[in-house]
Length: 367
Image (tube, rainbow, N blue to C red; front, side, top):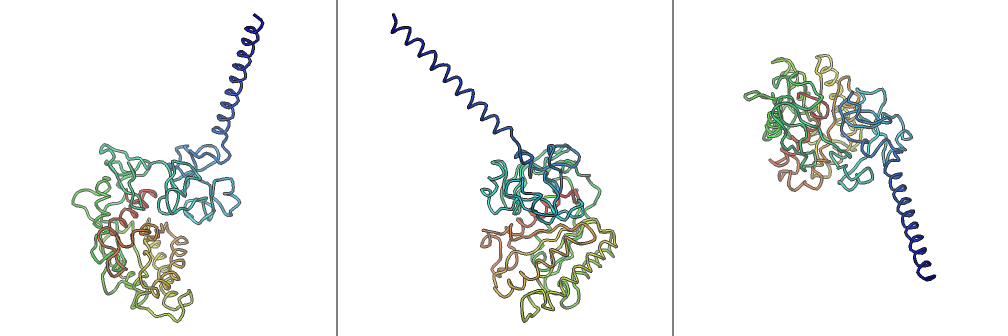
């Protein structure tokens, strides 16, 4: 009898101990999931619409994602792996925003399992589509599938005013990267048409040229001439462009740096062109800068020109969205470039158009 009582007491004690441990484990687990020192893995770098109050208490909807404006790195220290980088200076009263850079999706795991690498930065959430036409699949800037990413329906991207810019008010200018086949513009029109932003029969105006009259400064400001010709034909609200490739291909430099006259002249010409666009009331510019060329000498000049043009774009007197195509072509150079190792083949043109369209959706450009 005594033995039976002892066994019963031990069994009850063991049961109470097990229940206590389970309760402690549950409490600890809940504490970890609800503690939110960063403003939220579910919010940080998640896509948003300004004014929708979807970023929580600590973050702000800036540049289409939940983040923080910043002027120094310290502002971003409470966010996982974030750095203060230039961006959206026309939208915020700060020189930068907190971002997490990446090369592959795995780099974004530090933010959350839901974040993926898109155009060199981590993103989560969808640019939802609206209107009667529904969704469909688009493609992100890296070439991967991105479901319901804002394409579809007459309503365009949710939160963006629709049909405020006609297709004829979108002007494409640039050099052989655009003009070799003009397929970038064709694919871009197709994406816009699928999204309801371009009606059947409407076209973007593509004035990019293949050989002559296609440099920023060398040989006489050819890209500026393309723009001026486009403005003389009809009102221009959106400019999609590249430029500088012809300058570095043909121009000679003793040293491939910012002091090279060819490189300095190209950067200065870009600044003057942006100023003229602002005077003409152009509303948005998307500047697509090249993937790395195969020739080492040309690449060195391109590397020197890139930061100068990026700075000119980001500090332009009108909204200018910089797109570095190295992020798009990374790991796909053999698949995306022609044999000249300079200009895109059909797959590269499609990937470039998808990257440009992603920028246009993010910033409500010609939706």
